[in-house]
Image 1 (tube, helix red, strand yellow):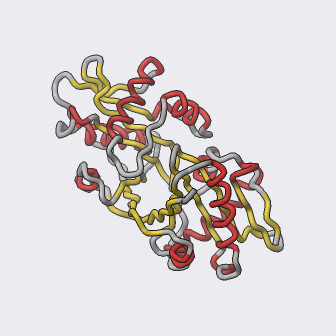
Image 2: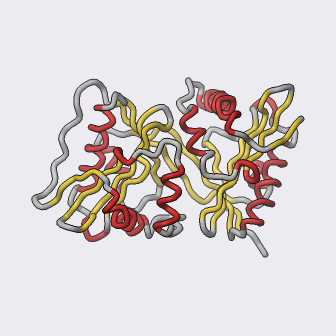
Image 3: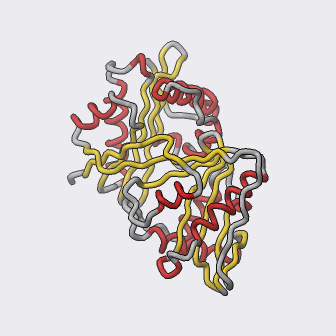
Length: 299
C-alpha cells in the first residue's frame, strides 16, 4: 500500500472514489463530482495537509485537514471493502498530528449518517457526537420561480466590490451566535473566496436598506450535483421581515435561469433562528445528514 500527498492530477480519480462511497452508503447514484473535489481541496495545502492511500493502482483511502482559527477540520474516507485494515486509524493519526502542529484547540471530524464503521473508530479515539447537520434540497421544475417580495425601502442587489466589506460584516454578524462559528477577518475571508476554483460573485446577493447591508446570500455554482446556497444570513435588527426568504427565492430564480433544477444548502439541525422551517416553507426537504464529532486536544 502506498501513501502520498494528493496532487491536482488526482482530482478526477478522487471524485470517482467519493462518488462510489456515496453510492454505497445511500444506494442511489452519487451527486457529488469533480466540482466538489476541486472546491474542497482548494483549501488545504496539498503537500502537507492531504493523504492518499493507494493499493494496486486504486484509491483505498483519502484524508485532509483544514485549520479554521481555533478549530481543525479532519476528513477521512476509506474504501468500503478495505475497512478494518488500519487505513482509517492511520488517517486519524496523521490528521491529529498535523492539526496539533497547526495549534488548534479542538478537532471536528465529519461522517455521513449511514456510515456505521467510522463512528466506532472515532468513539474509541475519544471523539463525541456533538452536532447534526442536514443537507436540504429542492427540485425547481420547469416553471420560473416566484418573484420575491420585500417591504418598501428594501432592495435586493447584486454583490459589488465596493460593498465587499459591508457584505462580509453582515454575514459575520448574522452567524456570530451560530454553533462552531469562528470570526474570520475580512482580508482572510476575501482571499479564501478568491482562491476558490469556481469563485463567482455573480451568484452573490444582498438586501440593502438604504446604505446598510441588512442580509446576504453567497451562492456557489455547483455543489452536490446542483446549485448551492453556501451562506444565507440576516442581521438581527432586520430579522422577521422576510429577507432570508426573499434572498432564497431570488437565488432559486437565478439558478433556474442558469438551467439548474436542483438547489441545495446545509443547515444546523439545531439552528435557533428557524432556518429549517423557512427552508421547508419554500419547498425544501431534508436529503442527507452529517454528524460532527469533536475531540478537545490537551496540551
